[in-house]
Image: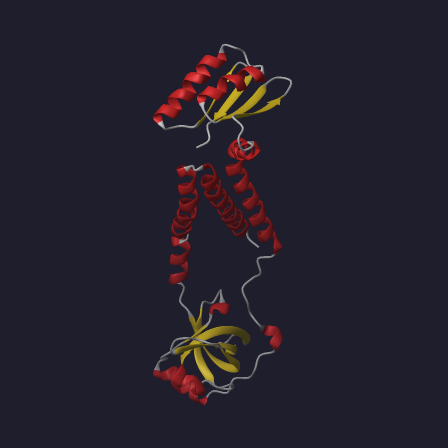
Length: 278
């Protein structure tokens, strides 16, 4: 397992957690930028992945595929609503000068040609030398390969010789889960006060005050229905009296302008956040 796979899992989980949390939090708080972040983050991550993968795809495209004969060991047709039927083929691939191996692929066959795909038939396949599990059937092989396939006898490879992509393992899942939790925490953390205080406000009440204190600071959240209810909440909270007029002016300005309905400022060791519900 590579470090790149772990990083992709972590980033993918982080984007998923952050996008979902931003979208839900934005809906609850009626915050348009958060909603747009929740929608745009996965798009931006997809574009980033595409751009970052361009060099790798270019290297893979430059690799000359290896052509070989392959015998159909078994087939299993799937359902479809179109004319092409996905057929799962287990093949024994016999490359020239190399050990034979088994591989399972999905090959799309026209419904009319399905009876011609039988166990024991010899096909021509091609695959990247470093990734044989990506083998695919050559639809129209050259005359030489058609002649070889018609006369060839391919011995079945043992079932233990199956090739498959390397497993990612549980470490990628753990990395994705950690990224998911971290992404959600990054979004929800700065907005936890608004989220929790919106549920603590009881119907019919004019104000709600939540105070958190430590040895060195006081953090206060005040939820009011109008500027008129702010003075009573401030006076009962024990804040310095000089803060009250400034808070009232800001609340009245916000309501009159129909704009910002939550703000925060710090005076000394006191941090006050005011929320005016819509």
